[in-house]
Length: 265
Length: 225
Image (cartoon, rainbow over all chains, first blue to last red; front, side):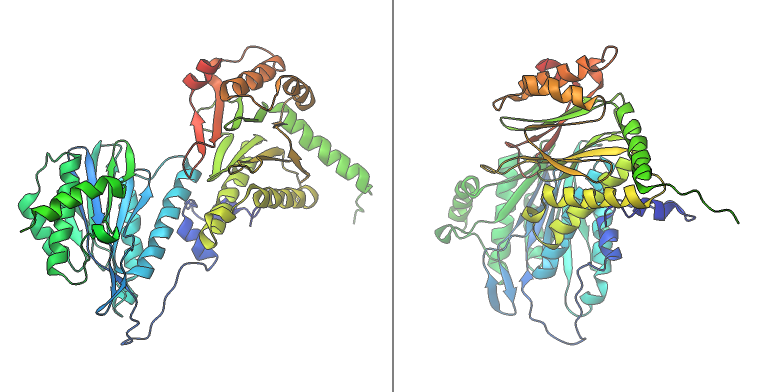
């Protein structure tokens, strides 16, 4: 592969096409992740459920519960649903877990690949558009019940503020102002955020609101797992600010979770 | 019909090597040197945007001298090679050795088969994890591959530079020490003064997170000096 001039191929006679895309490279090597399922077949693959994102004073918070379900069975109780996309953005997944995790890995590699080749990070809008394209590419499988719907958020280095994006199953990309949710418990979490969210939340308040939203989703939705301090299961929560991506460790979440659970009626 | 002149293969190789060597010697040198907490890559480069030192993967960095378009292609191919390998297997499976071998094969092929050999020399730096040793792979224009100990030099008056660095190099240099040794040796073998703002430098920092590569700005260099 090395020594074969990919750039000169692009230049010979044809228009100049960018060759900094990792997924285009995988395409050329026939290595793109592929799934094919017969119509009407139930694969029974585990589903990742509730994730949410909200804006606060210095940036964004993203959170997800830890449960994956297959039908009415709890398939995994410590699934990770919120991932770093790069140093200044995060992606949260809902839908068919296995596919979502693979698409996340591809998305992360794409962003890093672009950054290394071009020596500059993609703009936040550019990252969101690329993710939308990945979701759109998955549309045929969505008809067979293998749906992947992510949330994306990050810190816009150019504008100096946090931004949220939500997606639909056809790859539609929506800029969200204040908060966004998706997954089976998403409606419940959204109702909670609607009542509680304020633009001037500080970090601890934002973490608390995110946890409360997940707890209230878990109370109404069987597929959403609430925090379980006894078994050491805490939600996945991350923040993205001007200082970059930060995963909140369980030790930091534990006191807030305890407070939230005690305060529930 | 004209019959081409017979050129003995020895002469052909000699001519090609001489051609490539001349092109490389004209370039400004780069020094890759290990220090107690990582590996430093440093050289003079008046351009702020056309880099000669670059990140390839988590713990692997690239430095090259010679023709920009030629080593830029090697850099991009290297990133593609590393990212595909890391995506298909695991991040830990991407090693400097694999990449150095791929470069060596590619340059060897080009040297014997293409009309013009590449006028480039490359160093692939691979930062060892914990107790593992660091590796500095030096790949020549003809594909010859060496594993250098402690430091590697490409471009400029290579032999002279190597002697000067060997005089200042010790196993326990810190980052500032490594910068001092490298910049002094380069300045001594370069005609004219070097503008302090024109150093291009980066480190593979063993204290960093997953991605060890970090560029050093002009301030960090002048502080060290």
